[in-house]
Image (tube, rainbow, N blue to C red; front, top):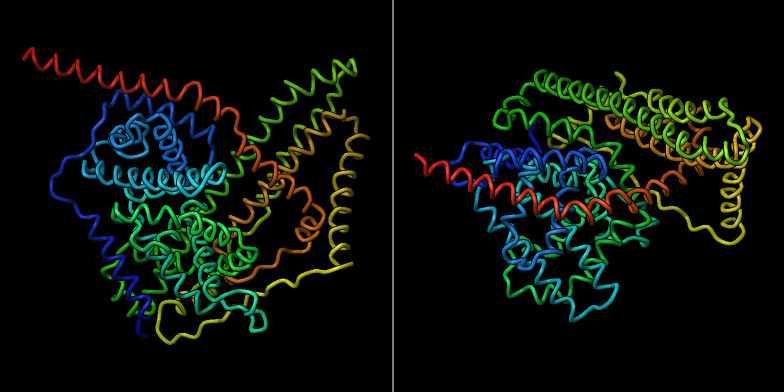
Length: 531
């Protein structure tokens, strides 16, 4: 069997990435003081806990935070790149003595571009609209800087390959084609592939979409920036409409069900892109390589899920104990002149046990799934292999009484679920505050557990049935899960500890770190003079 043209292009892109790994000729690199780096790295580990994000987003979150602070405080943004990069290296986000000094100039060009667009946009926008555009551009700038320092050559190649393939496989039902343009269908597939393959966040996806609207974005001439400033607000609105498109989730769900084969081909290519052609020529060898890649991912997934189950359960347990000791016990003692230790005990143990049950009851793989994966890898890799067409079913608009009835049923389930739980807890001797805290924790646990369950099934190919018990749980607990999702978003948005660290500690701390580095450099120079 012959490789498809799309697969051949993918192999060539991986070969380019592989050549980029070869040692370069000696060149100057950015260096920071090791002692100052250890102090700064310790602080960044603390910030990593406070500003917790998923593992693959931790570095980008730190870059964004540091970038925004330096832009805000910079007296001369045109000279910001070098100290900015030094801070990133000191914080342990990039290795010391590895980033070429030429990256300083490249990062500075990104900063100058953003500053120029923001300043020029003030002639066309005002008030909140201009502030939101500035915030959006800075978020995209953080992503662009990360990609400049650590180019995602492989990841982009795999995204483009899967998106190109999915354009043929994911269609809209003929009777619904008047409800979505062909351009939007292609863009929604592109967005869905980003979210499925690498769980990328919206700013990163927005940057890649922006590069499609402005093909020369990364090498744009300074004379074109004024023109971009006039149109960038409209482009921002278009990109945001795609990211929040009412059908985006529909496309994502289909794409997410079939991402595993693409990831496995990427894993095999990463190992040896130059030998891929010889490997696929022998079907038995190719199947063995697929099985090895699948089992390796499955092992990593199980380890990750066990770690997530342990730390999530421990975190919920410790948080609940602290809240019980700091708030619930004193509250009960003050109002009721006594503490119901039985109720406190149940309120501490039920949420973490509930989370543990949610996470541990999911199945991550099966032999049937492996066979389905082998078949799908063959379909996407070789020419003339028949691929299943997946149709996106657009929801019918509910009107009149039916729409009203659906909303009322949902509200009724909300009242029944929360009301029923509150009634049971009240009968068990829980105080009003304890009931409130318990329901809040339960909603966060239900949302967190559901997300972990979803992630634990990421190797499953095709549509999967939930099972009767989880279907019943999903029906009755959907209001609880939705409440947990909303509250989780508020916790991230209004992270008080993060705000306090940014305002009161971080800026002075970085001044101290830079002073420490300069002091040690001065000491070294004086010591060298002795010899």
